[in-house]
Length: 374
Image 1 (cartoon, rainbow, N blue to C red):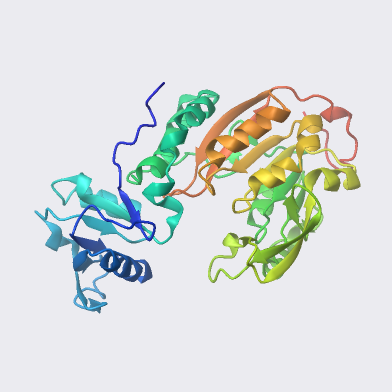
Image 2: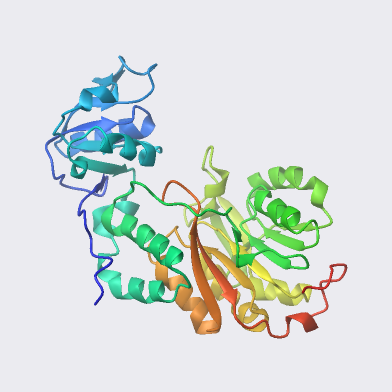
């Protein structure tokens, strides 16, 4: 078996999922809320935190949970582990790499179990190898290996990003005349991107079930009402009502289906929606916080009939690295796959899929008022 996904830095991620830490003393880099959480977690595990490090000179000289806050200079020549507890961890890694004598001493703190070493993909190398082998170019394979390495290895330093905008892959992008399903409409930013990309010559149906996002969506898209239509439902494998968590202060893009959520939303299968609208579909974009597989299950007929271009987020669940591609392959095998990464963190990794055969789409006539597609 190919060993390209063999862990290189076991245990580099630490968090609440750990019961034991591979060190007894450490520094914490980050004097914000995540740093405070890391200090508490490390203390519970018996680790002594010697100092908190931060680049913010206004915090330096202060105290966080009884621990002094210092500038990074105090780490020069240090042989203690440093636990990065900041959303700026990629930049901090690059900074520490130039300060510490051994980059193996760098760890990353995760505030939940999702990225703990107990939940790695190390047991799924065969699935990963198969999915990676199906990718259409070396850039995609390199980025795929990078993302898998984050889960397996916990190594976040130096993440490569794509040289094109998100949802604008050179071979899998919106074109004039497209009918587009924007699954996860948020505040309308992606829908507007598609309209402007096609110079107004497309139709976008944006699925956004969050009531708290509705007013923002309508406000942002008010100039594009002829091209953008809000669908106040979520996409799922079938029609029903589900509990929904919108209690994500400062992060409206993190609203998600949650059995403990306080809101109730309506969801619908994409196939049912497309049949009701009697419309062709040329592009499906999907970013719905881990519900991507369920939504694809509800789009089986649409994918089989229309062979739409696909732009699917694959970073919300580790298993989505292979499960989403495998599911698409179970419907239609005539797709070329690519990977794009659009963030300095583990987020915003997109599986781009381009149909090799565009059968029957020019015969569909419901894109009325749109120019003929080339």
